[in-house]
Every structure is written in structure tokens, then in C-alpha cells.
Image 1 (tube, rainbow, N blue to C red):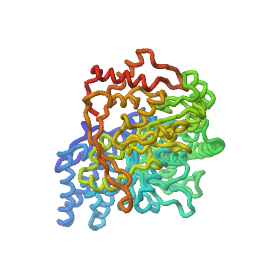
Image 2 (cartoon, rainbow, N blue to C red; image 1 turned 90 degrees about the vertical axis):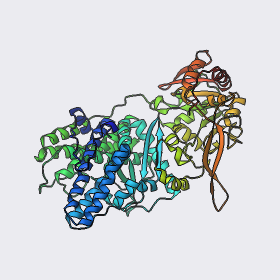
Image 3 (cartoon, rainbow, N blue to C red; image 1 turned 135 degrees about the horizontal axis):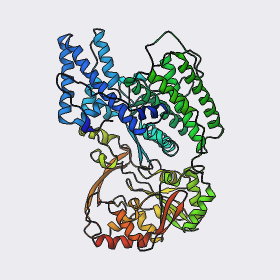
Image 4 (cartoon, rainbow, N blue to C red; image 1 turned 180 degrees about the horizontal axis):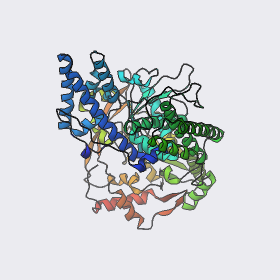
Length: 625
């Protein structure tokens, strides 16, 4: 989206858009179903200008009608202008809300028909009440973030044309959270170009009911840039594919708003291999482009060694459909010159063969490399890992967990950090969740934060390996509502027991127990900045600042939950990169390669002892978290 510094101001009497074009390189990338965040920014700028035009058109049209309607619309427009003056970022967020295009178009249609326009949705946007009611899901994989509203209420959702769910309960939100975590991992690891674009563009997902026959359904209407709709599939691969498929519909719709690709609608209809009814040229173009994305998805699955026979069948079928449709479009005579260039790009892209760009690592290879690094049978190890840095692994994260357990053996213990800082007061969400909600919604949001449950609460911001470990059969998880650890193996019960609720990472946490077990730390494709063990040293430095924390914990019925507040050390990882480099310079760290990742292995206790002295000596003057 357009940076705030480049957002044009809206005046009282006009809302002239800034002219926008798609540069040739981005246009070529879009034809190949690529473009990433750069294309999203250019298309989003076009949508921004379009919405300013619609808002001004609504004001001008209403001014020529009944005085009461004119006054109501003028008042709403004045609120937009005032928001622009007071808080341009908030104004930009309103103008780029996924459903404002649909709402403005409906209001204009009502005026044209002599009807009273419905503007309650716009008042909700300006007040921040609509999005305040929507659950937010956020998942992070290899530092790439997908954050979506689950738009489970509101009138404009019917633009998606399918049966809508009722507002979601906590269990349903959790199911979506878990499903999107799995889908996002697939996109980031195996389809990074699509992950970049989806993460930059899609703000909202409208939950749909499955089809009457139980099949999954999805949608992306033309006037809802930034939103898609889908029913919840059981297969994370299919949800990942749905995100790509519907995003490409969104992307093409935004491109067509800026660059006409075909002429006016004609009576001609054209056959599409994937459906029985002939389609007009515009509809065939949209279906062809979405099929390019589906073909590209299955081609990449094959290149990653995933999907087996299903991937081969889907790739072959979708590739054939897309090639046939592209040829039909190029022969139709209905494409404009830009459309011909676009469809030629589609045809060239769909003809690319699957190519494995990086060799898949096998489980036994990871075992050998971990042992060469120095990890041994019987070790207790705290692992921080980026699977993206490892490179392609046959079987993905499950293979990595299995390889670690193979090395450690039945007498060893695998430990990971499974923090849940998102379990926090809404006033602190900019720091703990990475986004803010309006202050007037804080009370209602506090009522919706679920209590921490070691058996159910997803970890937050620590990667897919940690998430997978605590969900393994036999895994144990500590009970701290914001800073839990999970462990598998011989010492799992000891490591995770009695984690004091008012001690994040100090003497009454699993870190101190790991220290007593002479545990080791394995950094697998990540730096010292995520080395949780160094936090234990902060508790041993006199005079460290303290902070008040708040979170939701379980309570006896009938309440079932309560807010818990406590004082603890103000944690500060900002100097850990410098601290780790200083420790590594002592020669105490073993370095090597595991897969494609740079790996470090060292003892937890001596590293913490070094950190205590380093911090006492003033290695960092920072006291901010």
C-alpha cells in the first residue's frame, strides 16, 4: 500500500486521484503470477485512488438529491476529511478497508435508484467498531507474518456470494488459527513469492459454509480488494492453494481497474475446459489467470518433492486447461494490445517445467550433520530453529523433529520455547501482537482474550518447530501463561514442572532447570538475538528494571477465566546479538552446517555465566524492551 508520506490529501470540495500506472516490469511479473509486494503496492495505490473517486462521487451525487440525504452523506464525508487532517494513517486504513469499495458502490447505486443509501457500515469503519468485533488471527513462519481479520459479521460480506457462517466462537477461531498456521508454513517454505504477495495484500478472510454437498467453497469479489472468502478445509495444502487462487482473482481485478485488457462485453462465449458452460472473454480471462496460479502451485509442490500423485495429476490437468484457455483468448479478437501481452505472458509462464532448485535433505543426513556438530545421545538441548534456513527437507518439520530425537535417543530431551505473548492486555498489542486496536474497543477485546491452556494455546512468533514439538504425543509444556516451554524425552517432566506464573525466564522457570541439567543450546539457522537462555542472566544482574505484565489464566467455573497481573524483570533481548558474538569469540561455541543452515551448539550454563558478567560490565546500556 502507499506509504503515508505519499498519500494525497482530501479537500472539502474535491478528491482528485493521483495518476497511477503499472511499470512494464511489474506488468510482466503480474502476467506470470508474480510481482510480490512491489506489485501489491502499485495495485493498492490504484485502489486507493479509485476509492477516493467513489467517495467524492457519492458526496456529489447526494448533493443533488433530497436535502436530508445530502446532509447525511456530507456529514459522513466531512468525518473522512476530518480524520485525514487528524490522523492520516488511520484515514488511509479506512480508505483501504477491504469492503469500502463495495459499500460506496452500493450507496451510489441506491442514490441512482432514488433510494436512501445505507451508510451504517461506513460509520462502523470510522468508529473502528466493525473491525473491533472481528477476531484477528496472526501466524509467523520464518519471520514472515500473515495477519487477517476473520470477518464473521457485517452486511457487506454477502458480496462473496456464498452462504456465510454465523459469528465464530473461540473454538472455531482456534480451528482457523491452526489451519492458517499450517497453510502459511506451506506458502512461506514452498511458495515464497506467493506468500510475500498474500501477506502484503490480504487483510480479511470471510468464513463461508461448505457447499451443500460438503465441498469447500471460496470467493474473491471484484469490489473487495484485500479480502477473500473460504470455507474451512481439513487439508492445509488445500487452504494454502485457496489463498493463492483467490489472491490472484483479487490481483487481476485490481489490475483491470488500471489497465483494460479486453474490450467491451460482447455476445460471444468461449469454452473453458474446467466448466461446462461457455464464458464471456472477461470471465475466461479471470478463470485462466486463477488457473495459472493453481498450475504454478502444483508445479512448486512437485519441485519440492511434495504432493506425490495428487500433485502430478493436478499439475498436468491444470496446465492443460490453462494453455487451452490462453490460446482461446489469443484467438478471440477481444483482447486489447495490453491484454495480448498479458495472456502471452500467462502462456509462457504455464509452460515452465517443474525444476527442483535445491536437493531435498533426508532424515539420515540431518542426523549425521547434527552428530558432526557435536549433539550426542543423552543430551538435553534447547533448540531455536528456522526451517526456512535449513532448506528443503523431505517430510518437512516432522522429519526435523524425528532427526533431533534420533540423535538424542531415549535418554535425551528436546526442549523448545513456546511463548504466548499475544495473551496480553489490548493496550500492549502493538508490542506483543504487532498491531493496535482502537482504545474504545479495549474493554470488549479484554473479554475475548482466551485463557492460556498448555494443551491448546498456539505458540506465537517462535517458528513451526516449536509449535510442532509441543503438539507431539508425549510432549509436556510448562504452565506460564506467556513464556512457556515444551519438552520431549527423559527429562521433560522435570524441565516443564513448577514454572512460576510470575517468573518469565528466571530462577523459577525451565531455563534454570535446564541449567541444572547441564543442557546445551542449539541455534539452527537463527542468531543469538533469539537465544532465550541469555534472559536467565538478566535475572542475576542487580538493579535490572521491572515491569507489570497482565494475561488471562484459567479460573474455576462459572467464570472459567480471569486476568492475572504480576511484576517481573523487564526483558530486553536487544543486546543479545552483540553478547553472543562476544561469547563466541571465547571459542566456546561449536559451529557447523545442518542442511543449508548455519548452526551453533554450546553449553547453556557457561553461556549464562558469561552473559551475567558481560551485562554487569555494561555490555549494553539499553533498558528498553
